[in-house]
Each structure stands twice: as C-alpha cells, then as structure tokens.
Amino acid sequence: MATLLHIDTSLNGENSHSRAVTAAFRRAWEGEHPQGRVIHRDLDADPVPHLRAAAYYAGYTAPADQSPEQRAAFALRAELIEEAEAADVILLSAPMYNYSIPSTLKAWIDHVFAVGRTAMTENPSLAGKPAVVVTSRGGSFREGTPQHGNDYVQSYLRQALGAGLGMDVTFIVPELTLAPVVPAMAGLVPLFEASRAESLAAAESHARELAIRLAA
Image (tube, rainbow, N blue to C red; front, side, top):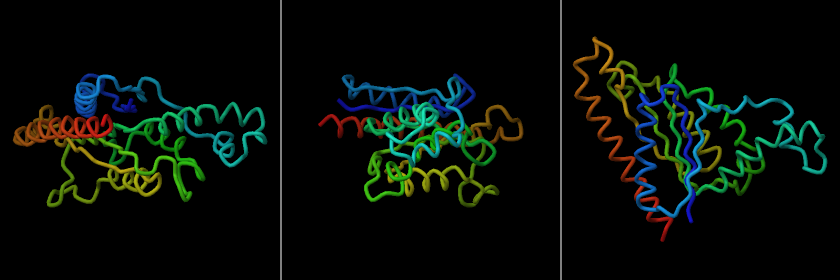
C-alpha cells in the first residue's frame, strides 16, 4: 500500500491555484490507487514552528545522550522526518510569495533536513523519492519575460529537495494567476487559462503514472 504525503501551504484557501492543482493530483492518485494512504498537512492552517536551537542540536546528539529539553524539542522533527520517510510520494504546494517559498514550507524543510540522516550522508533516507512541487505565481518568470531570472522558488527547491535530500523533483507551474483579477493583465487571461488547464492535466497524468507504478 503506497503512501502519499500531501502538503499544502497557500494562505488563499479555496481560492488557491496551487491547492486546486494539488487537489487534482490527489484525486487522480486516489482514483488509481484507492487502497493507498494519504497524509495531508495544511501548513497554513496548522503551521510547524520555526526550527529552534534545542531541536536543531538534538539532531546531532545520540538519543540516549539527549537532555529532556532536547528530547521534547526533537519530537516534532522526528515525527515530520518519519512521515516523509514513510511516504512513497511527497506532494508539495509552493506558491511564490515575494519571489520565494512560503515561510511555512521553509520551516517544514528545516525540520526534515537532518544532517546524517536525510541529508549530507552517503545514503540519505529520502533519496530517490518522488517529490511533486506545484509552484503557482501571479505573473510569468519564463525566459523572455521581464521577470525572467527572479524565480527563487524552483532554484531553491531544486537544491534543497533535489541536491540536498536526494529526491526526484518534478515541478508543475501554474502561472499568471493574477490575470483574472488585475485589470492591467486582462489581455493575459487566455494564457492564464491555458496554463491552469495544462497544470491540472499534468498533475492528473503524473499522479496516475506514479500511483500505477507504485501499486504494481
């Protein structure tokens, strides 16, 4: 039985474009693999705290040598790490906020990025695990656009999740999401609609492919 870890971060609730795409992925996954397990974390509704010193340094201390404070502080890190390790696929929503990822997602990564276990070790425990990242943005950052080169979401997550944790990262990018609500972008609505449709289709296709592969 394969497990999907589904993490949402958008603050826009039912109006979120990234949540719409992760929901499409999840529906397709469950349709192909109804006996599978889904763990859903909504980091906007229930954010994890920023990593503090006690929890950070406890990761470098053998469990038997941890102080009571370190054991208590490391409990959440252990839960998040074990949750990621147990998942067969990790689905992340990472809308672009101020050129980068939501701070809630950064906090989750900081907890999961454990040197000697999930990262910076010969056999990181998340190596090879598929990570599907839905990164929506209000404009476009493609080559040839005025904002090209200012996207720090994909570059950071490619480094942190891919090079750092060893995961197999796929990006789905719904763009121009502000076109329907910003009058100056009205002419871009058809491009937004095409991007949304393409993103939903890509999410569904990739979910089915992964579910079938893991259920085999």
